[in-house]
Amino acid sequence: MMKALKALVILFILCCAGTKLSAQHTFNLSNVSKLKTYQDSLQRISEATYNASNDQEQLLANAKFIKTLVAALKTPASFNYSFDSLKRISIMKSPDNSFRIFSWYLPHEDGTYRFFGSIQMQTKDGSLKMFPLIDDTENFKDVNQITSNKNWYGARYYQIIPIASNGRQPYYILLGWKGKNAKSSKKIIEVLSFDKTNQPVFGKAVIDGLKGQATKNRVVFEYNKLNTMTLNLDKTVGMIVFDHLAPLSPEMEGNFEFYASDLSFDAYKVTGGRLKLVENVEMKNEPNANDEYYADPKDKKNKAPKKF
Image (tube, rainbow, N blue to C red; front, top):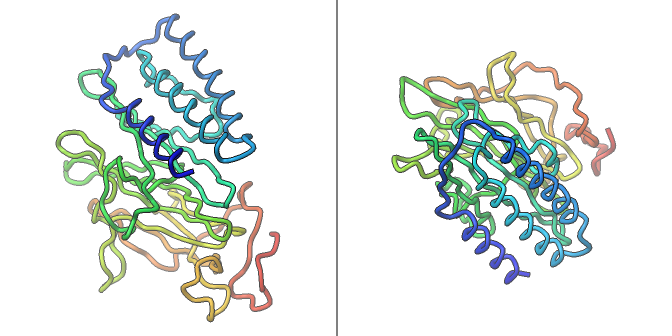
């Protein structure tokens, strides 16, 4: 299994590393037809990957998916092609149209997950460049460390929030889901920036807690697998709002597989190019189609999560 994973990582690096192409800002019929053909192939391969009968078959199918995706992205003007038929992967374009992130995951037989992704970047001279995102979660000794695309704290991203202040180089807040194992899930507030050589950097000391608390480079939330957690930019209050997580009972303190929302909300407010923690934000938790399960930590009768 580990050998297969390493081979897949090497394949991803070889496919993406050093890819820089002359871009066209307008489609022609030939490119559109070629990209549509690639999209159809990617859709079939993606379904085969998720329907594989075991991890080995899944990794082989995913390797084929990666090769096909990279070939598609090498097509001139691919940056402007939405690939909107690919429902299994997340494709998020930055609001300033400078890059987009492809991210997806593989669920393994033991309940764990492996994440994959790539940044496709549009440069000022009209060229396209890609950076493979290599999931290195298992080697993280500190979730607060700053990393590159080659030792990525993998996640499936669902929202990009651009942050800029006083004309300084902008950075981006990425909100993502990060499955962990059969007992708990994670969500993440990631910070993405680009250095002077235009290389991606994950993590940045811009997330402030309460007075006396250390500044963070990213925030990771962990909670019970059968529960759900709100983590979204709420434009009505202009803040990144999230459920406050608490243990189902006091004796479960620190054991995150028994954490769930306590029905209160906290938030990060963007101030001066930084994220400032605000506690006990008054919010209404709107129903979500994905919110299938819920367990109230304050209800002592809840020995295990119950259906919402």
